[in-house]
Image (tube, rainbow, N blue to C red; front, side):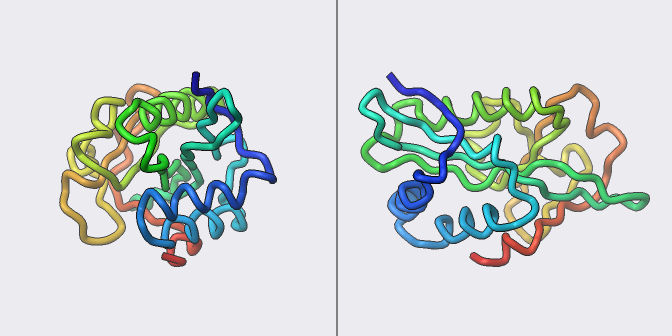
Length: 172
């Protein structure tokens, strides 16, 4: 059985390893570390997938990012990054992380989330193409790859603008 829990300090190296192995590079692991060291880190939203044998096999992180509209800058959440060890992929672990993360984000009172990710994966959890909501990605990407989700119905209704990532995201 897999459980989803908050990350512990003792998990930091294992989390980096999960991202390095899943992405076959060190960028995402560096990103996790940079976010964790920033003021935009939300400890309650850095989640680990753990087996009964206490093996960490997946990780997801949500942190504060911003939606810049004509009138204001609105804090929102960015889902980034998420990874599952290669030997445990395609077994529902990533889906468990997204579902539990989404629930915890909602419980903490957040209203929306943005993600740059696979358009065949994230829509099943309620993400939709951001441009359909009038929200532009922070940099050029295929339109279907940048998505948003309302945790509170209508919360993006009058928030047209561009997403801006904090400086920690420049580490990759």
